[in-house]
Length: 256
View 1 (tube, helix red, strand yellow):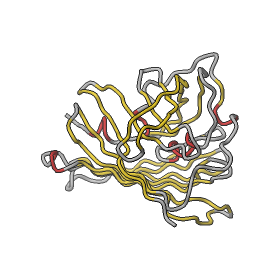
View 2 (view 1 turned 45 degrees about the vertical axis):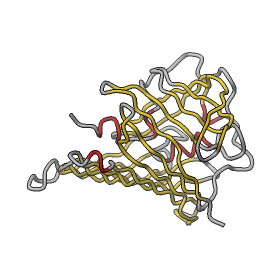
View 3 (view 1 turned 180 degrees about the vertical axis):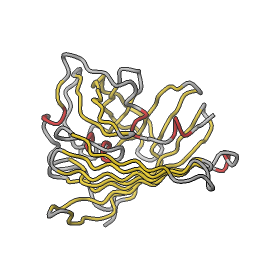
View 4 (view 1 turned 30 degrees about the horizontal axis):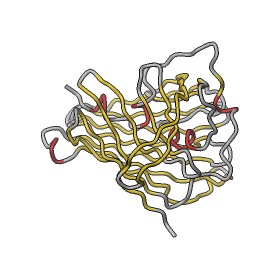
């Protein structure tokens, strides 16, 4: 069984089924958090467990500020890999997005995935209502590469798999409301929905007892972010066919 089906996309753990409600609000139009909670140098580390067993580790890092296509953007990196317990199953994902903190939209995305013998690289360039998508994959080392390239029409505010996290952290939510936003994943533009379920205190070994906003998907997955100026994702929980998956924030580094 391919565990990567459940571990590959950290952000999508809480997206669940993609569906729209007639009462959903367009999250792109919601007010932004001021001042922005995103800081260059911020590094967040997560433990990922599967069926309560330590399955993997993920680190997200706002590396630096750069200029891309004439705009100031954040270069954000993310790495996720299986732990030693899963020696029989090797998985690694290295993502990078260039995120515009003013428009809260990505301008460039890349993802390298190794899933046992399978390897793939995905590159996306976001340009004025279009996304240039390219994927190069190889099922096994001696099998020829498979290439896929296409240009997709995208609505304003379309997110990639990594920028999604920083987009959500930057938006104000209204308790009880359901929002939708466009998401580009697996070569398709989806309309993802998110409901602001409640406020809840969560115990975290690094932060102590913190108040959070709980975001719920139509499939019951939940995402906890701190209800303060930091807007830190502290916990994600979801159910899968092979058991419960949980991601927990374990370390925070902020560059001086």
